[in-house]
Length: 49
Image 1 (tube, rainbow, N blue to C red):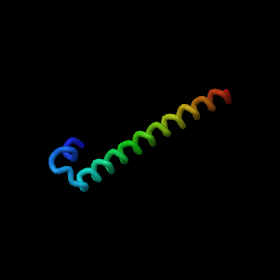
Image 2: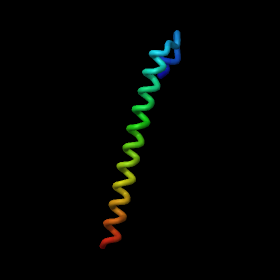
Image 3: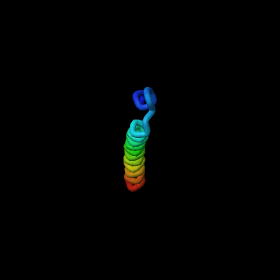
Image 4: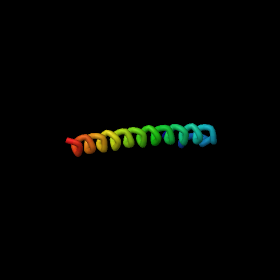
């Protein structure tokens, strides 16, 4: 990211940085959704017992 902000700041570097950040955020959100589902499944399992 720092490289994209340094130097001549051409749009290609900035687009690559935005794409990378977007991919990272999507990955984090997916992980959060998986954790949430696992917790809900565990709670529902305990309710059935």
